[in-house]
Image (tube, rainbow, N blue to C red; front, side, top):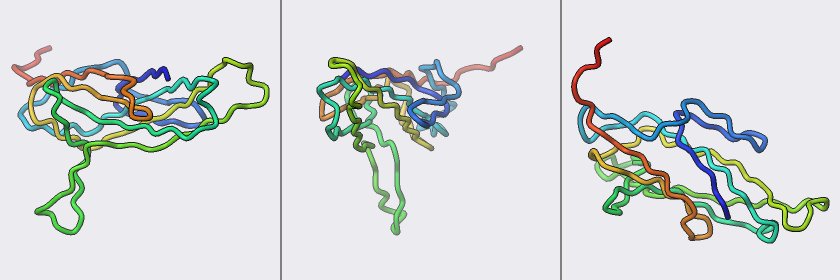
Length: 154
């Protein structure tokens, strides 16, 4: 499957379309590390081939640094704040039908949005958002995280 994806400040998938704000960036700046980034959204468009319709597919999202170390996407504190549960991967399933009038060979499009709130970035580095479908990596989106240095004057 072919996948198009982008980073955004906010994204939402509604009625087969992605509505997004703050699209077109690939760098986050932090004043100190580790740093918490308030929100990152991914807009994802999956081009499902004709012969892959009418089947359940699994999608997974993860992040790793350039040394291939996994990054925590969500830290859940349930019951015991001393032992939070780290979540390194988000995912779900999708299925798209094949309408009777779809010409053989045509694709169907599935639009999704995933949002991570309060993501902790441990250090300045090059990170990769990894999208997998049916356990196959289909997209790697680079994101640079840098130390904010100096003052911006205007």
